[in-house]
Amino acid sequence: MDKNQTLNLRRKHIGPSCKIFFSHDPIKIVRAKGQYMYDEKGQRYLDCINNVAHVGHCHPDVVKAGAEQMEQLNTNSRFLHDNLVLFAQKLQATLPERLSVCYFVNSGSEANDLALRLAWQYTNNRDVITLENAYHGHVSSLIDISPYKLQHQSDAPSPDVYRGKYRADHADPATAYADEVKDIIDKAHSKRRKIAAFIAESLQSCGGQVIPPAGYFQQVAKHVRKAGGVFIADEVQVGFGRVGSHFWAFQLQGDDFVPDIVTMGKPIGNGHPMSCVVTTKEVAEAFMSSGMEYFNTFGGNPVSCAIGLAVLDVIEKEDLRGNAVRVGRHLTHLLEKQKEKHLLIGDIRGVGLFVGVELVRDRTKLTPATAEAQEVIYRLKEEHILLSADGPHRNVLKFKPPMCFSVEDADLVVEKIDLILTGTLP
Ligand SMILES: Cc1ncc(COP(=O)(O)O)c(C=O)c1O
Image 1 (cartoon, protein in one colour):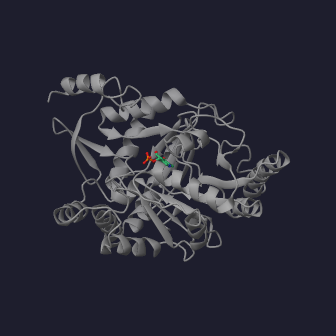
Image 2: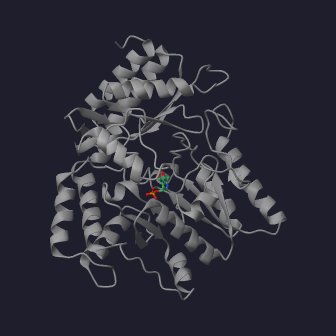
Image 3: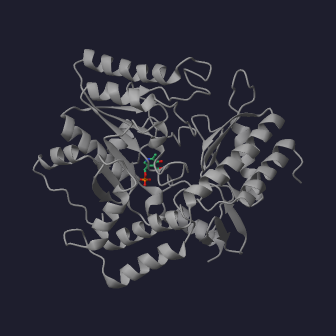
């Protein structure tokens, strides 16, 4: 179909709130492989943003596992099937011992919604604390708690040591930010409200690639648990080895931190819609004690589980965590050099293949360079490189590419950013 025809049909039949990238000249992608996407004319684009195609777009092992299982059987999880239990076992092996019970669902939103239900049932409390600028999903329960869309009183300051309330020059930002959570708890108690949960991404993604100071989660967990609540770590964007050194981003905080509930999504199925909530035996038993069955038509079906197992195998077999460490280090090193050269680059922060580049007009006042960030994104698109800008001011360039992203890919994109910022790109 001609691209304009596709666009016209989309305008006619698809809800206008479903936004499209580069709306003035959208890209029509017809196939993809590894870290590359191809448009209808065969033009190749380097994908620096797709953390869903985690082990690479259309990875043959994942495609084969899904197709073979589809030929055999697909049904709900009310029958015994090896794929379900093997996937749960293999996923558990990546987590601390305590996190041993899985619920398979179909999207990040569903996972977080179920996590809230688990927390409400386990604690018998109701209030949920989130971080400023957070986004946890599109279902009603999450829109209610996601400040990315609406601000609330129970939003704790984002633990951002570059632009946030307590910065790198603060003696102990982890404690200062955790004390803010304690204040919210105290205020809730003074109004006779009780805390069910604190929910945060292990690294804030939509919030602007924020990396919380080490020790912050331990202290928050202590305050929240003392108040009778649980800690929910949202790993929907940042899990499955993206940070390289660890399988889960919450593990960056240290071995002494274990959340009560972990939610997973996007990369788990490499594009196949599936997700998971993992929790402790105690939380799962409390959920059971409500007496209500939990049934999910598609969650944990044999095809999804075959795909999930294949994704875990590829991460291991191709040492994608090792690649994230090596390429991530190379990318941040190149970007640091750009920071020395271009005043517009205020901050480079990242772990593994989760890297943010914050653009500012003034390094002291930190005036967000929002229009400049958009310009970089648009110019890169003209160079057939896909990057996005996020954060509350839309001035943070976000790198979260498929995990097969290479040193050469990093060289190419940073070279183009350099040319754009120097103003010498033809
Ligand atoms: C951190 C985080 N949690 C949850 C979600 C919701 O996931 P989904 O779109 O699969 O429902 C998203 C989606 O962008 C997300 O970024």
